[in-house]
Amino acid sequence: MNGQELKGKVALISGGAGAIGSATARRLAQDGARVVIADLPGSPMHEVAEGLRSDGLDVVAHALDLSQEDSIREAMAFTAATYGRLDVLDNNAAMKGLPADGDVLGMSTELWDQVMGCNVRGTMLMCKYALPLMIRGGGGSIINISSGTSVAGERYQTAYAVSKGAINTLTLYVASQHGAQGVRCNALLVGSVTTPAMERALPQPMREVLCAHKLTGRLGLPSDIAEVVGFLASDRSSWVTGQLWAVDGGYYAHQPTMPQFAALRAAVSANGA
Ligand SMILES: NC(=O)c1ccc[n+]([C@@H]2O[C@H](COP(=O)([O-])OP(=O)(O)OC[C@H]3O[C@@H](n4cnc5c(N)ncnc54)[C@H](O)[C@@H]3O)[C@@H](O)[C@H]2O)c1
Picture 1 (cartoon, protein in one colour):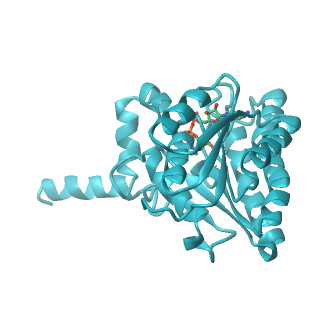
Picture 2 (cartoon, rainbow, N blue to C red; picture 1 turned 90 degrees about the horizontal axis):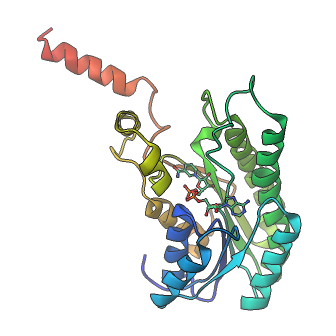
């Protein structure tokens, strides 16, 4: 969409300086929203906001540390003071990609508490302090950016994945508790979206394995997620709430064995059997 269907709405995007967050800020602002990008003080949030403003979009940046309750409260107060309301909360920031986040046997209690404190408590507090603003304005839409790692096991990233599982459950509870007040809450289970960090770190053979499991045949782009956030932010999705949606190119929609079985069948038929 390139309309103005978010005109009059105010959106707050945590982690808005990152790959998916900045694409989402552009999408929502292009659709007419006034947008607050909230990110860590050391992030390029001001550069991102300035770039979007230079394209004529209404975007400001504000410091946020998701692991600090005062910082969350302050970001909400800034949004209310700057734009007078809050209609859309995109809980996109996360502590992620920590090399020490491995398996349960080797899990450090400190790392576990740090990830839970940031991702789970932080996302809950973002909802807690956004809800009064949304309710006062007649309702709103909360979009929690979760991950496909929350619904299938792996050998590493245990704390991150479990934190996203908790965010899935939080989504159901917020939707259940505030639907009657006009607040919707949905989660996107994102999978394999290319970011500068992934471009640097993902070896080609691993990329090929991932692509073999994407029913769309490709990895995601930040704009793929931004488009769905835009839909959930808008009144076009006014009857959608409490949903955990996989936005992952179909990664979890097929049998795990499908690509290997297809390769085996192709090999058999190539051998004329
Ligand atoms: N890229 C993927 O393939 C993928 C897959 C599944 C889920 N996700 C989720 O998408 C979201 C965005 O990720 P991305 O890929 O754009 O990564 P990214 O690293 O580009 O962006 C994350 C942003 O969050 C910010 N952030 C981190 N800790 C913060 C804190 N304590 N307070 C405030 N901001 C903080 C970072 O500064 C950064 O700008 C995350 O929730 C991530 O878990 C991404």
